[in-house]
Length: 202
Image 1: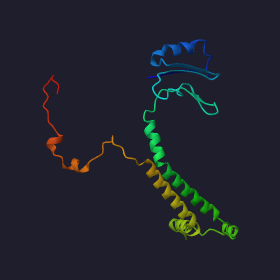
Image 2: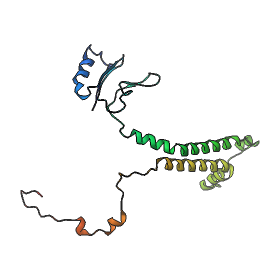
Image 3: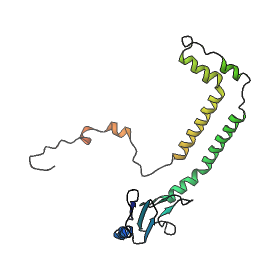
C-alpha cells in the first residue's frame, strides 16, 4: 500500500512544514520513499511501498515536458500479460491501419471537383411537397455521393473488424453463461422453502 496527500493554494497559502508533517504522518503506508512537490498552486506528497517497477516508479510522476505532475496510489499487476497481448496483435493492428491508410489515399486521391458544382449549388431546390425525405436522402447518398458513401462504409467495416480482433482474446477466469443448464434446471435445485421461527435465524 502507498499513501498520497495534497493541498491547494487557491484560497490561502500553505503554512511552512504542513506538507512535511502530512507526509510523515503516512510514512507507515510506504516506507520505501517519501516524496514532496510544491509550486504556487498546489503541494503534493506521497509515500511509496515499492513492489513493482522498483527502478523507475518513484513519485511524483512528471509528463515528458514536465508541464504536468501527479502523485497516485496504484499498481498494474498484469502489465506483463498486457504487453504480451499488445505485441501479439500488433502485426494485425498494423495491417489494418495500413489498409485504412491506403483506402484514405484512394478516397482523397481520386477526389475531384466536378465542373458543374457552381451550377448545382445555384440550382433551385425542388419543392418539399414534390420530394419526400426518403427520396431526398436516396438522391444524396446513392446518386451524388455514392462513392464516398461506399468508401466510408468500407472504412467503418475494416475499423469494426480491427476493433473486434484487437479486443477479442481468450480469458480463462471468466464465468460464462450456460443457457442449456439454466433452462434444464429443476425447481427443487434452485428454490428452497425455509420456515423461520420467531427470534431464530436461518
